[in-house]
Amino acid sequence: MSQDNIFKEPKKPDDFSFNKSVVTVFDDMVTRSVPFYLEIQRMMTELAKDFAVPGTRVYDLGCSTGTTLINFDKVLADTIDFVGMDNSEEMLKKCDKNFKDSGLTRKYSLINHDLNSGIQIENASVVVLCLTLQFVRPLYRERLVQEIYNQMNPNACLILIEKVLGEDSLFNRLFIKYYYDFKRRNNYDDMEIAQKREALENVLIPYKLMENREMLLSKGFKYVETFFKWYNFSGMIAVK
Image (tube, rainbow, N blue to C red; front, side):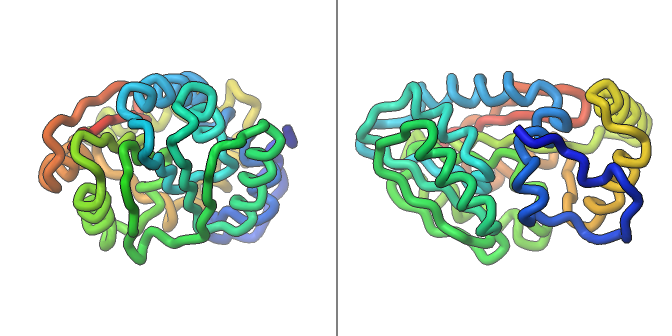
């Protein structure tokens, strides 16, 4: 695993993107930047096992390097097809290589797609948005969730992992402070933290946890539950 040193040196401010340099270090970046990332992956696998139906499809929207689907592959029936979508061609190339390296043999497809333009899914029993919805422009976010709901199978689940805002400014400030302390413990220095924050400012736009919950319920989901919460990170599951 290549180490994330992208923001180690001073650089010209620019919007964050999942380009080749990010893809190369992405797995190190996400494990050092997302609290309990490996446990979140384990929990998603556990949840998917109870909702994925043989003969259906599992979608990972924003599949990145394929970690989630590789974990799912270990526990789900072989008759379940995988569909990974990402708007980074470099990510999809890395994902495909990781699938092959892991020995994944089930039917799968990888699609280069920008979720801001909407979504078409078919025969889905599980849909995953792992740290993805936060990168969809707020203008298109509710439409995307509605389209996912409309096209999912009955009793299918949506698994949503997001960075979130605190419900009020006091806790929002505290949670951000605790999060930067977490990054320092994982050997990011203050310049790396500041430069990445600036790069993400106009790209990653989080909602409050309750705003995400209300959005899911308003689009028709019958059950919505928070299964993971660490300061300003959350995991939710919604069932159609």
